[in-house]
Length: 321
Image (cartoon, rainbow, N blue to C red; front, side, top):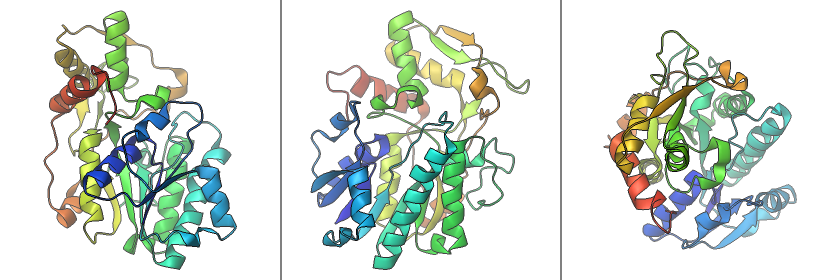
């Protein structure tokens, strides 16, 4: 049996689809649905049962989880709001909860694959090498909470048995519940439909012209295929999950316009004050370590991924994956 925390979320629900497509449905999905439409991410998918995050947490606390014969835990559940300022909440939700689940897996010899984040790299002062852990300087409490767990894993030697995944800028179907944390592709599509143009932040660094700040954008359909390859290997360690190629916001916006068949119209707006000191102007995953373990992977180009997202999801009656 597989435990999938965050299984109704963005990456988790897309990976659930991949598990189903490969004949696996003995899966306990754990998540918190709240009042959003996140529950729709689970429609059409097969799994053993669903538990709210707090229900599952209580089962662990009371020693009642043993009735589930897990062989693998995918721990993708977390608060991913990079603007969340309550560090205590993030540390409890993203760090302490992860530690409890990790200890549970170690005690029972259960394979543990978890979501870290490229937010641990901060502005990239030390580069984007996934061998780096303790040296990193995250820019916000969210990144710090993920950094803490990576450090705990390495400090306890569990990187020799766990798999940590540092997701870069993932976009694609099933992100619709994320609000302000949804990708710029999704936001751009909605902006074009509502105001006929895309708004990008002006640069806060003279080294980057407006819209030429770069990120490693990676399509969720590629991400879940890589996770599937990892699951079917004996790889262990902490790895970047990105394309290894940084692309600019201008290129992303133009890809959206092209997919929508509309002439580009970009407006540059001031960056919000709360983002100014924690903004990543450049990210690019170093992928050598992972590819040396599982083999290379051919990603969709940014243009083709955006085209697929818009034409096969955002413009359809059924937008989910």
